[in-house]
Length: 198
Image (cartoon, rainbow, N blue to C red):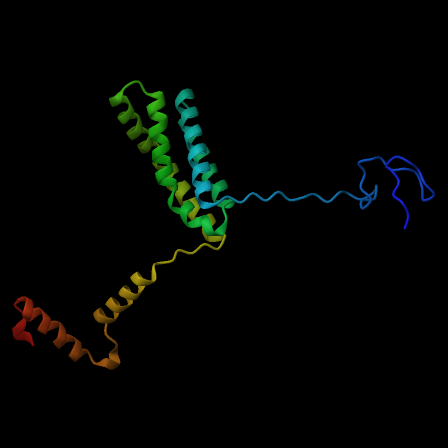
């Protein structure tokens, strides 16, 4: 076993390498670059969306460029949905309208002069930003669908819905007459006035 030489000292194998040089990359080859992967949790994504929307609305209120604040909201919706973990997409998909509303309230409180002006500013901003708000929400849903997110209904709810559909629309093999009699007898007990039809 050979003892290691300190960096910068030449040896029998060739010229010395600088202290920071790596031995795996040759001079003619490009260095492999590390890919930076940013993944947000659902809560983190909502906080980032709120912060970007809030700063965009503040900037729009101070400069008078309302479309810039809306565009920042739209870009933040796209970026947050793109960089959120798949498990956190459910929170991100439902949050854009609420985060815009809360960011609008905070920005109006900071930039308006009085109570009535705050309320008026909130309503005017919501009215003028409605198309951008719908577009941002739709973009969030589209990107989430593109990344594989699918909404799931709770199993308790879907089980109840399936039973309700079976009761409302009986199968043809079970016989519709029995279903009609059952419905009409229930109606007669409630006093629907259709008991003579049975």
